[in-house]
Amino acid sequence: GHAQQPSQTIRGRVLDKDSQQPVPGATILLNGSQKGSFTDENGIFSFEKLPIGRYTLSISMVGYFSQKLPL
Image (cartoon, rainbow, N blue to C red; front, side):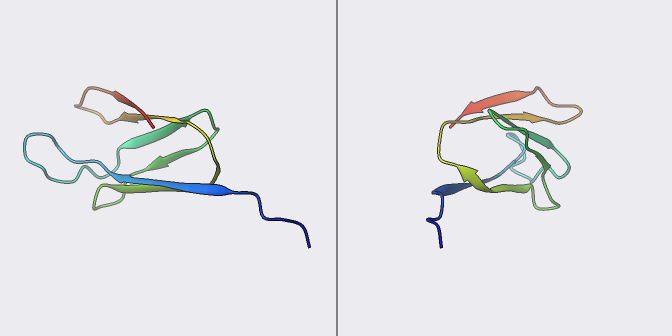
């Protein structure tokens, strides 16, 4: 067979800064790829089998300021 390409998983959790409660349904875009995701009811998201490299997460949710997180 052929060698497995190295890959990485990026996962995280989106919490409200003040209440520390999870934020479900936030949009997570992975700049540098064509992937997007939403947080689940526990505020958790993950992207699997990504090529190794640097990414920036863009997090947006109605009623919140958007944030960009370089990884």
